[in-house]
Image 1: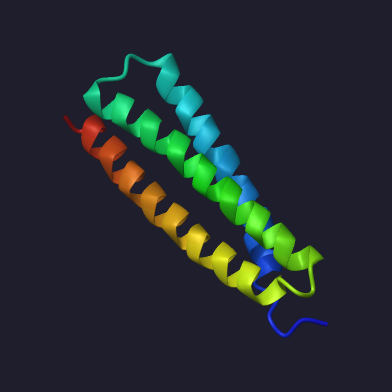
Image 2 (image 1 turned 30 degrees about the horizontal axis):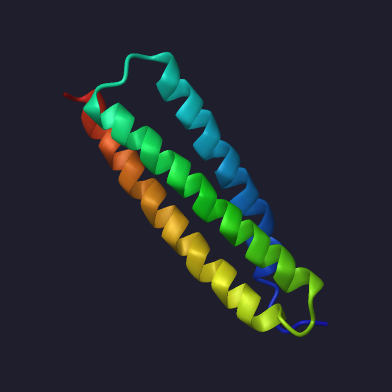
Length: 99
């Protein structure tokens, strides 16, 4: 049994956030995006790849005894990058709405 079970939480959350990024990306494509919309689309595409990397690292952590600890640390760090980037994207989209 592992000491840390962070990957048990990172795996489903990263996969969900990847889906959220793709959903928002698709919604932005339906409206006439301004400059901020185009920037947000690019950032959302990159962010979904960041969450994919976190998902894969978390899965590796769960499946490999030898790589469990380093993969879990990587999954956690990459997930935090993804969440931070999603926060920036949210701010850009919010500012675009009030423009």
